[in-house]
Amino acid sequence: SPPLPIYTQEEVAKHHSSAKGVWVTYKGGVYDITEFVSLHPGGDKILLAAGGALEPFWALYAVHNQEHVLEMLSQYKVGEL
Ligand code: HEM
Image 1: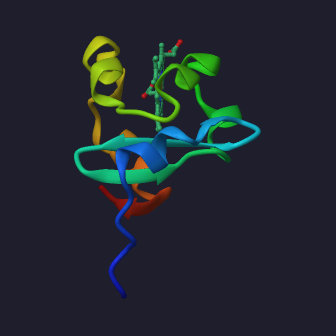
Image 2: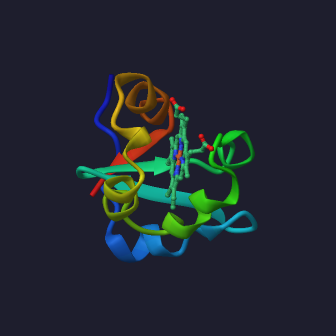
């Protein structure tokens, strides 16, 4: 498969709301999670990370430190930083 596009942090930061789409970064990957927001078991808290990095939040909510969560996230990958 062809390489995914490279995005800047600035471009990611523009996608910070349901209206503009919700993008997040994780370990150098860029994810468009717009469609996942309403499915999130942790509810609207997910929007705290909108337009930025997941790491600080996932460090606080260790429930994400599981293989099945990373598999879920991987489905939404749209690019690299
Ligand atoms: C729970 C995914 C971002 C807060 C969960 C669970 C999944 C998930 C799958 C259930 C885990 C389990 O019980 O096995 C995701 C994904 C995220 C994301 C894919 C980003 C793309 C966030 C963020 C926060 C957050 C940024 C906080 C700011 C929570 C909380 C729970 C939770 C508090 C526990 C809900 C409960 O069991 O009552 N998340 N999450 N999540 N998430 Fe997230």
